[in-house]
Length: 215
Image (cartoon, rainbow, N blue to C red; front, side, top):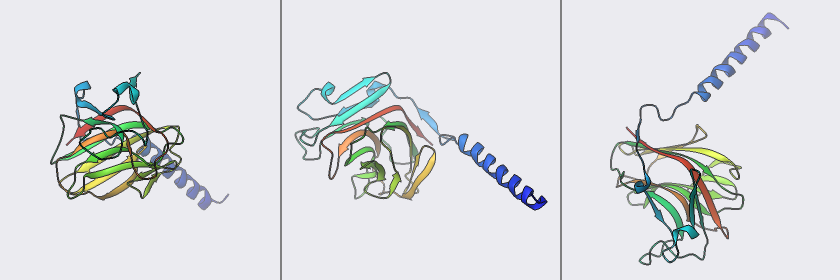
């Protein structure tokens, strides 16, 4: 091997090493303040005609949600699609930079469902929806943020800059979406299962280690 080849190889290995270190030490919460959450902040929305424990369980730190296309809405005063979601209450916002962090898990077969929302927009109802379609995690219906999402824990960081009207989504610490939001309004975070188009016969998601942060 020539001296030039040795130098090129060494430089390549150094770049890979530095990139690996940078990736492993990425802290998306740096500069943010973590907001204290307790049970009072987790408001469960589920079909209005059945008990919570028929669509939601919290055990060993894991929130488990499931829903069926034949289920009722969360209130008899709306005709929205069936859902079992947690609405994070007490921390609605209209300005600033806010972040949702959590770990999600989607069992194989779940499809046609929203699993996380940044609620509030103008004229839209939401600023962000993360959905599942046939094993892929998508931003609304597109683009695809991550493929082969089934049957594994994945980390979600959704950062909403209200003033800049910008949304960034990181999956497993990798930036997968950076785009324009849906306008200013009163916003809050939701996670769980909320049926969309072409839903599976049963939709389920699991979540743990939920955090809300702000600047």
